[in-house]
Image 1: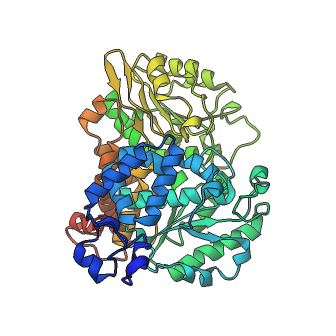
Image 2 (image 1 turned 45 degrees about the horizontal axis):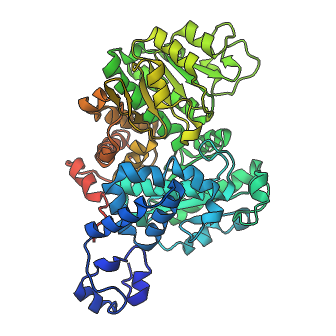
Image 3 (image 1 turned 135 degrees about the horizontal axis):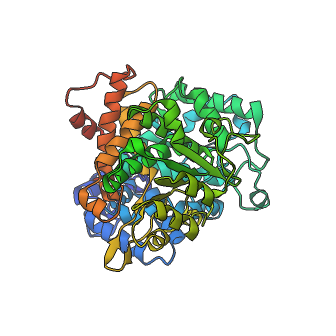
Length: 536
């Protein structure tokens, strides 16, 4: 890193320490007269940051403030985020990032990522030279077509890639200089955005078909050429594209899809943990999924592997999983199926959602619909009728799109529900009991997987790595957290979780013959040594 001087040093977010530059440093780097007299340490600077943050009246204003801090002083931003993760993570990512993406073009101030459009065809490898870092290990890319539960947001989806790279740093200890947020901007079919004078994206309808795939091919190959040690995380692609791209590249390059594999792993971990509360055996569970998109399908496919690992045949494992969509229970007599859903179709008469619960009596209900209120009172009460401790996992985000709230789940089951959600909910008191609902956040999974891949230089990223990540996460939930109704660890321990997952992923890479690095005997210490700590 080139050491800067004077105003250039203060303008560089990676090197700037602002008022924390010592007297000798101010003299050495030409900063005398450019800063107020007092020298402050990073803890005191954090107090100013938190004071200013807490004076903001809305979450989107807090997001803008934090983003501007990241643009000014990278280390102070990440130190504050790590030390106050419960408060800041919901502002940097879900649920606030949804609103930030909707307003992205209107609140845009400074570029923080890399943009690729159809006009770059044939030149993607060359233009990647314009990025200011060369040792990239994490590439987060979205095409903006299915942002959270909000749909096609075009180039505004860059907020997702920026947010995810921030979580890699804060939750997984990946150095910020090794992270690259990418917006694969191939247009938008969102009429509102096309008519917005301030919209910043490629102002044409979305690229599709072979023209789209060939551009993705060029991008993936360009990453291999320019950043051969990088993994590619596909994020918020439309369901069919998500599966098509994952299937296309997963056996060729280091890549995964967080909506499919990360969501599956965090959900599997929550189900594992729920068994410690219900005293049921995992192999005996019946699981019902509402929704047939990429998240729900990915969950079901990983659950099958988990059931098989618990001793079930693949056929029996699939029979333990059922899907419900707008038409009701997915049954074999239907004329049309999504290809990946067909193996889960039941030989059952067509029934609606409530009737499906009545008939199948699932132990676990998982929502991945993006439609608020689909777990209504009748549905939740029916789950409670058949289960002493019904497991309700409402994954859709942002919060405005969740299938039910924590309060509803607890109230409609008289406090018996084991509840988790994709977006955070506040603690809820019912009678004498204070419930602290769990957030099934993918940030428990993907940063640790990424760290493990970096440590081992695994050539590919396999489902076995997500299986072991789920088990590590479940095993790290403390008894007192379970007592409070949570099936995930406190977010404040997420870096420890990421460390544990990274060690396990490294071991899997070694066992599967995928590790290009020779891993040391004390892998835990080695992984810890790789984790970025933002201090001056």
